[in-house]
Image (tube, rainbow, N blue to C red; front, side, top):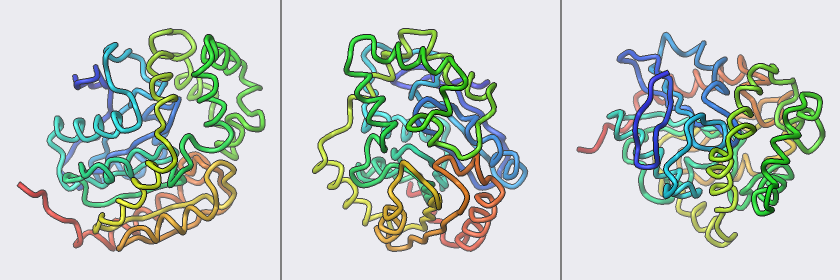
Length: 287
């Protein structure tokens, strides 16, 4: 797997290559770029698909001890990743995590021409829902993350209510979840990276201020919400789409948060329509 050295440490990523329009996919906590495997398989021949594995607990290489792995710090790391790979006119796609909105709020979206926000953190829903709150609490208790990850070794517990059973309606294959969870289960340094992020969420008033700043993003935005989401509030989909001057909302039924897992074909169809309709609206890179 290709690697790139950034200010925080070494980031692994996959890149389908080619000259086509660039899609950069951002995953959520305790996942890797493989969360997008179904979508990339469909788009790989039409677009250049880039899937970094961010230091959100599924990464295999610990970050530098002094790295800023806060919510804002990781959003800026995404900007650095785009810059180091010299990616322009990027369509930034995210699910579960809300880093793309933070990137916009911080005014660091020069390389981004479109957003696709799929069932993700928004407004004051950071960390999201009961699973997010449990993880944040575990990160504040000595040994809490080690105990939590120890429980996730047991495959039946992964589908428990309030745990990963609320992330996807259909079970994620065991070998994929093993890949996601093994680093934080086996490496204390990875858990330390995850803890930095988990305790970094700013106060509610800051989150809402950041959300308000997203109104300045004047490029095309597709918001995709899951019809049966148990973690991201149903009303946030419409509110998020209304935040952007050129936002639109698509709801995909029979899915929980991980739409790319539960309904990849429907997600690909919605994205393909959006990408085709907005192709002429892409704003060239500002030199």
